[in-house]
Amino acid sequence: MNDAFITRIAGVSALLSVAVQFGAIGIAVSLGIRPGGAIDFGNGAHLLAANAYHAASVLGVSLATLSPALSLPLGLGLYVMLKPAKGYALFGAVMFYVGMTIAFVHEVLRIALFARLPPAYVAASEAARPAILVLGDLIQHAQEMFDLMAFVVMFGLGFSAFALAILKLRVVPRWLGWVLLVLAVGVGLICRPLGFFGVAAAAMAVGLGMLVFFVWLAAMGIVLLRSNPPKESASVV
Image (cartoon, rainbow, N blue to C red; front, side, top):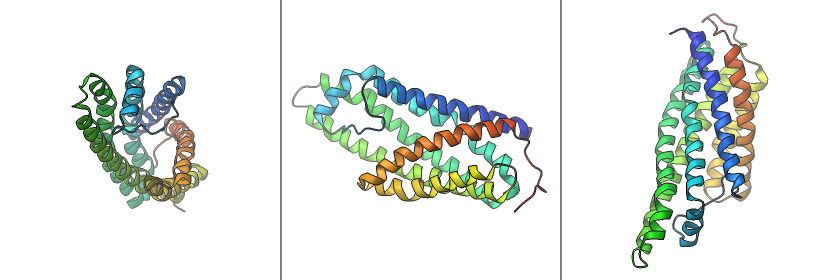
């Protein structure tokens, strides 16, 4: 397959991913939900509240899942554009797709929680409700672990490698490499694990960092659309 075609597909997918992600955020905001806000699926009051806007919340979560699905060509596009950096580009691509695989397990579990638990809890008898709360708590902890692993592998390791590849070559504006490196290390390898273990400031930094990342992703989408993948002899710093 032509390298230029791959990078253009990756560019389109990156821009669509950003648009869909902000669509999911828009749905959450329109419902008065703080994007990324916690819903405890082991808490009956939370399930009752979630059921009140069940259809819209499932749509929002589905759009949030569609966003990374649309970005699947991104890893291949970045690899094609950055492959003269050899090991950096290859490691980035491998970590990107390993992380994506883990992320989709997380997303499937998350959609299942939003789609099935609130209406099941509302319809259940008082005697059955405690079992539903235990199941919800168990599945929620599992999907949060998958989310953490996917984030560290894909975002922390994969994008760190891609950032180093960008800095090594002269085919992408270097500021995009520096921004990505700061995000990948600061958010992916430091703040996200700290936030998982309850550090509030780190969790807030992850949210802000991801907003910056989507701006970066839109800029990289444009770069990919305009790129001509370099030959193996491309200039290396």
